[in-house]
Every structure is written in structure tokens, then in C-alpha cells.
Length: 105
Image (cartoon, rainbow, N blue to C red; front, top):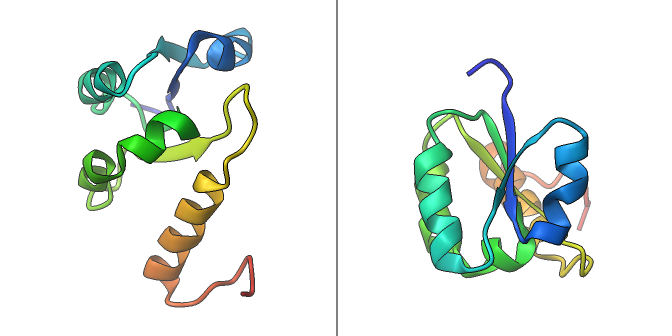
């Protein structure tokens, strides 16, 4: 598992990552995304997940918070950012560091 990257999301949103050599896993629904995450979690260090799917899988994704790997990061889809990914990053930083060092809010 040496620096392996993957992305899970709708087909159009993940296509550009495939061109960049990132392993892509299409998932059009929450249930499919959950199944894919379960099956790839042990094989990838960083998994990108589109915000639309991540937002609806918040409780499921908490299981990854207590482990060093994989790191699951929410990213915007082809539809643009909902702000969910930034909020999750901010929350994780505050939990880890005890202070907001990037957003200063």
C-alpha cells in the first residue's frame, strides 16, 4: 500500500482522475459507494470521495477517523463544491490540532 490513491464518485466526476493514473471506482449511489469503500479501504492510503456521496455517508465514514489509513477526503464533483469537503477538513484539523490554523475563523 505504498502511496496508493483512489477516487469514488459518479462516472463523469472521476474520469479526469483516471487520466492522471488514479484508481477510479464509479458509484452512483450511497449504497454502492459504501460497498466500494469497504472493499478498497485496506488497499489504498488516500481515497477521494465526491462531496455528494460523502455528505450522505457521514456516519459510515467515521470508522476511518480512528485509523491512520485510509485517509478519506471529500472533493467537489462535476457539479462544483457544496462546501462539505472544506467543512470536514476544518473539523478534522480542529480535532487534531485543537485550533483552526488554515481558516482562522
